[in-house]
Length: 380
Image 1 (cartoon, rainbow, N blue to C red):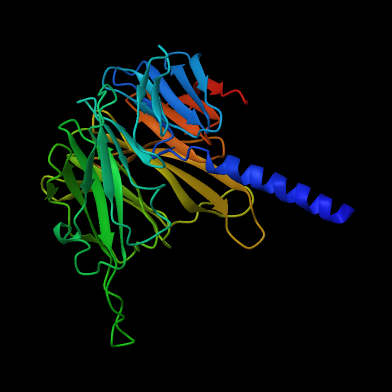
Image 2 (cartoon, rainbow, N blue to C red):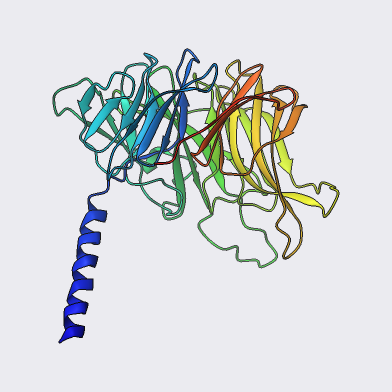
């Protein structure tokens, strides 16, 4: 009888825990950090905590916490930092709140029209062939008006030949109320000739008009490379006008970063990280590309890469950031950074802002990597 009582007690605890887990908000942010358009503030989310940080000195301006919620952080065109949950939107600095109607979505950001944009489900990338659904709403709108825009596959040249094995990913909110989207598909069949290579994966960049849902292809819609496969989504970035778009393919033998002029379709930058780098101990190779960012003046690209020791049982890591000239592909500077899931939040002529694991934000000089300031986010 005693054992039965204990078993019932354990089951009761599990039921309570399960119920609590079901109430946890699963709203996510595609980008873990953002910088306001005036460059003065940085927003960063760390699970249930969201911070506003002074970009000049790294001091925390304000912090808000929400129990049983996992929110997203976005920076508005009005230089506000907003914490977004499934049921409400909070202005971090003023505390003002707005209603929200989408649960369990992934936030891309808020554009110049004060339009909040997200997409269906949690972060896309682990599942293939998932149709992209984009949600559009205005935080200040007190009505229940909400637009759902779907990405019709027949309008995506890069995937229309194989609708069972493709990937889609929002890239950036553009300053003309469009959303830039990456889409790519794999070959439909195995070659009949065993000596014949697979046809290359094809990818491209498309624009969604957030007002009417119209899809338009850029000139960069039929790109392919035999060194690339689309088993996993690339890391992407683009300029605010969408004229330049870049993709970093990390799940390949040759880690590759390419950038295109989307108005002409021409490739303007290419860097393959397939070399071995000598070190004091064992040789190092790039094992992962973690983040890329195009500078505000559209002349440079920063690439955060993880260099690791080659060989079984070797685990020394040497993460770094390299900055290249977008026009000449020449290396401008390279410097070491702390280990962690690096996200490049902003890049300009003299400073770069990097978020590490959602726990640390650091601003570095782009010429030598010298630390300007570093902020360790407080734990709960």
